[in-house]
Amino acid sequence: MSTIAIVGAGPGLGAAVARRFGREGFGVALVARDRQRLDELVDELAADRVTARGFPADVRRPEELVDALGAAADALGTVEVLQYSPVPHRDFMRPVLETRHRDLFGPIEFSVYGPVAAVQQVLPGMRKLGRGTIFFVNGGTAAVPHPERAGTSIAFAAESAYGHLLHDRLAPEGIHVAQLVIPGAITPGHVRKDPAVLADLLWGMHRERHGFRHYADDLDS
Image (tube, rainbow, N blue to C red; front, side, top):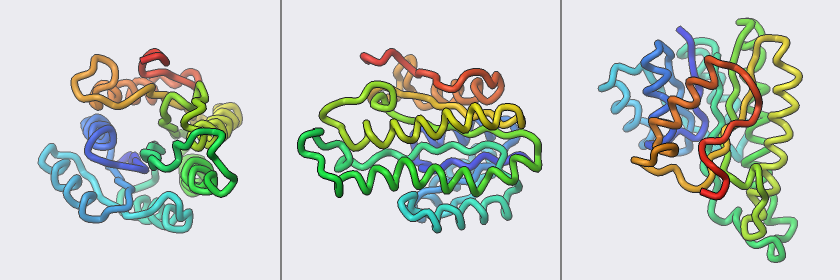
């Protein structure tokens, strides 16, 4: 069975991606901090005939994330698709002139240490398979920094650079690395930013395998 690991899984985008890939025969590893919410989501997906398991971990604790992804591969099979899409904390979004160096610890742990730990854990398995997809899902500040959201602007820039480097280096090995930038909020019913629409977009990116940065909507949305 092919496996997708969704880091930062929740009832919105994470659940929609789980259903979309589940319909294609993927097993789904859901990674998030809250065990109870994971269990509830696993039950909801089971009702839709999606094979899913929950693996608690805090992305700001790389060791926990590595252990969770290792357990996911043991339980469901080699991770072929990794989606890194946790929602940033509000306290990461301070105005730039009020942002001190200590205010950047959290954003960097969240958007740099976490992704690097996750990729390093799943990459050997993808290389053995000879294929794989790695998604980084970010807000609009990944593309256009915002002076009122300094933490995410700075950390997303670093995450974007890491992803782009991976894209260039891993493409010859059959591993596709891509970023989806979602300006503004994910909004049920929105023509472009409804969770199911975004899940379809990610499925298409997995299948088509071209380019690094993709946009869910116009940046001024």
